[in-house]
Each structure stands twice: as C-alpha cells, then as structure tokens.
Amino acid sequence: MKNLYFLLVLINLFFNVPAWAQDKDDINAANISSGAIFDDKALLDGYAQKYADESRDILLAMIADDSLGSYKCSAAVRVFKEKYANEVLSNEKANIIRVLIKRLNHSDSPFVQVEIMHALVILDRYQYFESMVPALIQKMDHYNSVVSDMANEELLDITKDSLYPREARIVFETLRKIFFLSRNRLQSISAPDENLQHKLDLLRWSIRILGTQELKRLPSEVINLL
Image (cartoon, rainbow, N blue to C red; front, top):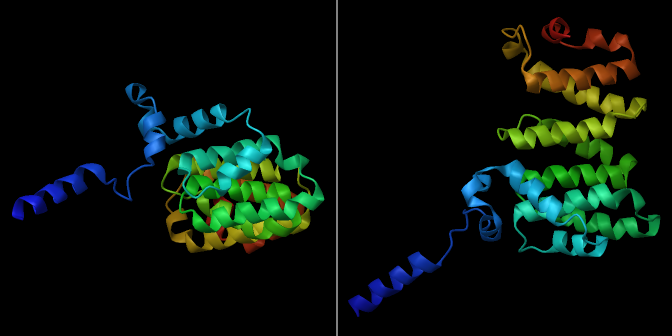
C-alpha cells in the first residue's frame, strides 16, 4: 500500500502542470534556442504575425476561448484591433464589445488587458475613453517594460489626432493625480527617465488643448520638469 502511495505521488509530480506556470502552448511554440521563450515582446509579435491572416470570426472565437494562453489571446486581440476594429458595423459592436469585456474581466494578463482596453476605445471611443484611458495611463508604470511600452504606444495612438477637450480633461486629471501623489519623488529628479518623459509628453498634449491656465493646477515639481 505504501509503494502504491509513493507511485501516485510521483505520477502527480511528473504529469501535473502547475497552475502558475507559463502557458504550455506558448512554451512549446517558442524558439527556445533563440531565447524567445523569455522575451515577452518576441512571443507577442510572433503570434501576431502568425495570426495576421486569420478572419475576424476566428480571432473573436480565439479571444472568447478560456483555454487560450495569454500571449495568444493578446496577439489575437491585437490583430483584430488593427485589421477589423475600425470596420465593425454599428449593429455588430454590442456583441463584439461583450466578448472583449468578458475576456478583460476574466484575464489577469496585463498584455491582454492593455490590448483590450485599446480595442474598446477604438470600437466606442465616447463610451470607453473615460474608463480605459486612465487604466492605460496606470499601466505605463507597470514593472514589466513590455507592458509599459505597450500602454504608451496605445495612448499615443489614441491621442495623436484628438482635439477634444473632454478627452484632454480626462488625461490631464488622471496625470495630475498621479503627479501629486508622487511629488516627493519628483523633487529629486532633474532629468526625466523614459517612462516619466512619456507622461510629460501626454500632459503637454492635454495642456495644448485645454490651455496654459491648467499649468497652475499642477505641482511645482512638474512645472520644473516641463
């Protein structure tokens, strides 16, 4: 009986994959010899290239699949967003948005979250700008530099052609709160790092639209950096 117990333990150790492990399908598909298995950006870009020719319905089915790995899901959202999001008809948007929000609510992957936040703004800018853009701004401070860079790129895309005071106000107020909370740290900074510079650039965009009178509402530490 004791031998049978140890045999069961060994079987469990060798054949059960830990829940916290990287997605098995992502690992198997990675080019281990090149080191891509440890490169989030390489994995995401690789899957996006792989799915580049998939149809809209296939991509949405992938996004809705709970068993799909986070890299694959993120790539599927990216391809859908870049190829199809701007072509969705009004009567189709509700169902597609429902799929994206369900995945957003059930995913703890920052890669998936950032891609979906951007996709939602593209699909319905008026409804989702106010909720998704501040969340993307928060992602700019993510410890994973790939996530931080993704969030910055999405925000640049969202704001590059916008001249709407409502949108500039949302961005300004979000950054203003962040800067007030971090003003003690800002006191010791003479030259912004890349991450802070991205925030300052975004702040400048909002001020260009809202007017320079908004400068007086910012911490003096930020004025010095501007």
